Amino acid sequence: MPLRHREFHRMDNVGWLRAAVLGANDGIVSTASLVLGVVAAHATHDSILVAGVAGLVAGAMSMATGEYVSVQSQADTEQAALEREGGELFDDPKGELHELTHIYVARGLEPALAAQVARALTAHDALGAHARDELGITESMRARPLQAALASALSFAVGAALPLLVVLLAPMPMLAPAIVASALLFLALLGGLAARAGGARLGRGVLRVVFWSALSMAAASGIGALFGATVA
Image (tube, rainbow, N blue to C red; front, side):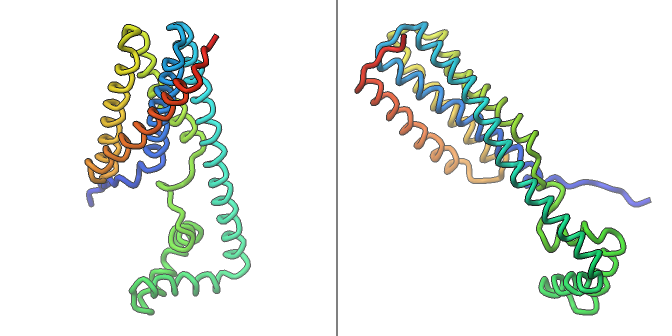
């Protein structure tokens, strides 16, 4: 009996990984930037904490909503394409078989072998073959709106909780530098994990995340110091 195994490919996880990394990164950056802006405006400790918690809740809901709407739109597009392809298979099966054969010829198969492969795959799962080889829709890459929304919301909340933990533990005189240092550390770790999980270069991923995040926090601090608005 032949052994069956499933090879692991990083691309299999690209959907949830993208949503989780984006959510955690946004949670850290937006909450740390928000808190730094309020700190620079000379707000009280309680006001800083309230602003941070409000940012966590609003950000998590916003991430979940935006991700769900975006990925659901992609899922609707994929479903419409599959339904249209199913109709074409019903109306013109010979033409679709010819089209599939041409796809395999274009990929390097001899015409006779391409025709044989097309017939075999059509007999096994015609719509699946066209979805994969004509439309580029595969099971591992299918849009999953609910999964993406939950991953975004949860990862944002986890990321946003890290600067809030620093707010709770750090003394007021050291609050701003503690938030900056901890946020950059968390972001560097996150960038490294994302690069490792995705098979990308580690240093480039870390530097990219840290640079743009530091710029965001600096801008928020500058605005808070400039306006000096106190959060009531």
